[in-house]
Amino acid sequence: MSRIKNGNTRPEMLVRRHLHAHGFRYRLHAKDLPGKPDIVLPRLRTVVMVHGCFWHGHEGCRYYVVPKTRTDWWLNKINNNKAHDAVTTTALQAAGWRVITLWACALKPTTIQTTLTCLVQTLQDIRNSTKLTQN
Image 1 (cartoon, rainbow, N blue to C red):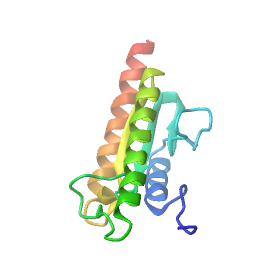
Image 2: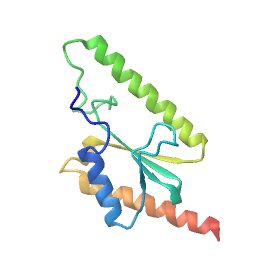
Image 3: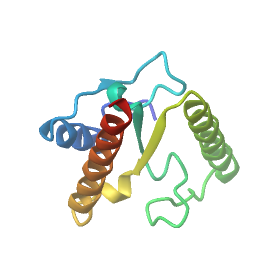
């Protein structure tokens, strides 16, 4: 488990490269925000959380399988992660931030283009609505 990274993961890097290529500028792992979100778009007051399906307990996903050994320990760990995610999302929303959650399974080769296109479109819609309210 010591080799498991909690930041700069492959799915996160794919999202970051795509956002940058489409003109979005962001901060990484902002320590001043609850939960240190993976990607923070300050101008849009939006954060993007890239969750691994196993570690964050993505229900109904084929990549979320509880190990057969030490099942109680793993379930406790994953449930704590899910609870922490819920608290973090609530705190961010209460502070006026929009929260977008991307699952790692949506960033697999068969679905990545659709997922990233939808993400960029969502962020462009947010950007456009922000411009309208500022005028």
